[in-house]
Amino acid sequence: MKVGLYSISYAGLWYKGEALTVEEFIDRAVKFGYDGIEIDGKRPHGFPLDWPDEKRKKIRKLAESKGLEIIGVASNNNFTSPFMEQRENELLMLAEQIRLCHDLGGKAVRVFLAWRGISRIDGKGNYDIPGKYDIDHISPDSTFWQKWTWAKEALKEAAKIAEKYGITLALQNHEPLIRNYKDIVLMVNEVGSEYLKCCLDCPLLESNTPEYARKAVEEVGDLQVLSHFSGEFARQDNGEVDLAVVTGMEYWPLPSYPEFVNALYDNGYDGYLSYECCHPILNEQHEMVGIEKVDKQVQLAQEYMRRLIREAEAVERKR
Image 1: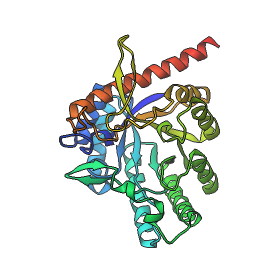
Image 2 (image 1 turned 135 degrees about the vertical axis):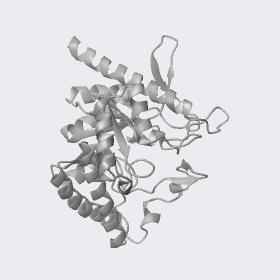
Image 3 (image 1 turned 90 degrees about the vertical axis):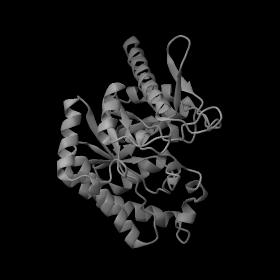
Image 4 (image 1 turned 180 degrees about the vertical axis):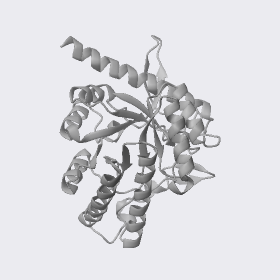
């Protein structure tokens, strides 16, 4: 398994300071020991209209020169609007993100069924305002299964586009509309394309128990082609890096990453675990702080996940 870094971590949304350029983001990924990068498919990083052919070639060459793999692009699509024109616009955007991924030498585009978006106040991101709008507020005059059908129809078209470019779509177990990890398996099976697979993320599971984490990995099985992890980390007295409580999200249950990674290893998964720092970075007074804390978390996240991978491999060798 390999460890990746998702560019939303440095999009200028979650800390005091400006977004990094893609070039600066690549330098950070190399500095902190990551194997690959995932580019967020919107501004400031991956909006396709901002990427003329020359820039695509330049960034691909830059990453290759630094020994860094471009994992792919993360879309932020919503296929549940009751308005056909909006769903078509979302599909068009996804098609452009697929082409961008191809041009960069990536292999996967992360997709949603539905998405509320991230609101910005004074340029900084938060989930508070979008959180007031559940899926029924987004599309109040349609049933769950109507939304499901709209999303399925769009993904069928998207999968054909992905096939044309040799790109795999990775459906993330991210709400809204997605109720649990079983829904991504259900949708992938209903679409029935080799170019739509799963992105199972441990922090998004409905239960944080080790048993549930293993069950989810085993049931998703070989449909899994991508995974993310998030959170904050701290170095312990013995020098090891471990999970820490996220300031401002003290209620958030800590994910069962060790068992999740062990299950991935047992299942033969050899893809990426991509870190995303996608929450406001706060101090103890719950005030937003600078990019330095993001840097520290990005460094510690890489160390933490490497340790879990090594431990999973060690367990296998003892068998």
